Amino acid sequence: MKIFAIFGNPIKHSKSPIIHKLFANQLNIVQQYEKIYVPINNFNNVINHFFKNGGLGANITVPFKKMAYNICDLLTQRGINSGVVNTLKITKKNQILGDNTDGIGLLKDLKRINFIYKNSNILLIGAGGAAQGIIYPLINFGCTIMITNRTYKKSCHLLKYFNNKKNINIIKIEDINNKKINYDLIINATSSSIKGVIPNISSSIIHSNVFCYDLFYSNKITPFLDWCLYHGAKKISDGLGMLIEQAAYSFFLWHGIMPNTTLILKKFKTNNYF
Ligand SMILES: NC(=O)c1ccc[n+]([C@@H]2O[C@H](COP(=O)([O-])OP(=O)(O)OC[C@H]3O[C@@H](n4cnc5c(N)ncnc54)[C@H](OP(=O)(O)O)[C@@H]3O)[C@@H](O)[C@H]2O)c1
Image 1 (tube, rainbow, N blue to C red):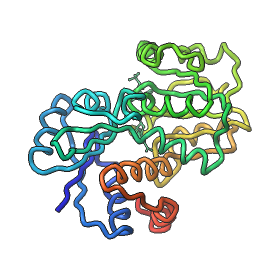
Image 2 (image 1 turned 180 degrees about the horizontal axis):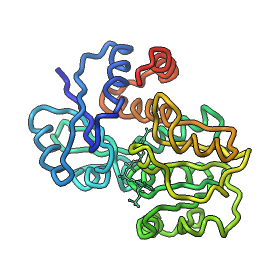
Image 3 (image 1 turned 60 degrees about the vertical axis):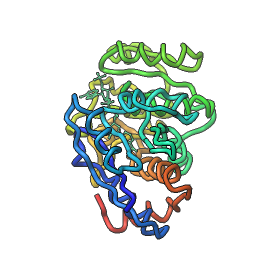
């Protein structure tokens, strides 16, 4: 049996096992995919134990994407570009290969729902592993990104990591209200929704034409999207589409075959697999 798993903390909310089961059924692949809870200071031990015991591939979620990057022997170009990884694979030579499928997964979903254009002006809220993973594909697509985060220092680290590229800027979250910038797309890449709260940010960012995207997903509206609607946004989406797309790119890395994500997204919603 081929064994895969997702590692995170918290992990209870993850829908990745259901999605990978749907992919495997669609493509007649026999595999096992589990959720593994990792104590905060024990990532390296847990992941090494998994690979020593026959694990072939892993997805990595909150808050271990940087740690996962650090244990890789090899990286894909996407992994190199982002500096964090959400997908690991054991190669034939028993090395750990790291990839980042978050960015390409998000971009594919944003295109599907027509939330992004080549020159979109994006406000990215959050500077954790998910935020870092999506920046490169978005700027590479032609967008401009303003990063804001509860902890300003982390925005500075991201700016430095991306080498102060001219289409990335940072702003203190408390200064948002002073700079009247009209964003086309706001992406919430914080983990605040997991705890049912929203980032403490001025509602001046919301207007009726702005697209609001929450990386978090749920069977009901996320707290952040609810807040966006309340302040006048009309076009909102949660991260379910991204979740399925990024999972499909991980599945491709492991099995060399791409699932039909349109069918899986439909199936997920129809069967209310939340
Ligand atoms: N849909 C998908 O496919 C997909 C893919 C990847 C991630 N995600 C989601 O994206 C979110 C972030 O994941 P991650 O891996 O980046 O986590 P992470 O590395 O732990 O980073 C968490 C980020 O959230 C911020 N944050 C946490 N609580 C906050 C609060 N109450 N107010 C304001 N900011 C807060 C943190 O700010 P500080 O720096 O100040 O701590 C940090 O920027 C999670 O909800 C995850 O489920 C979804």
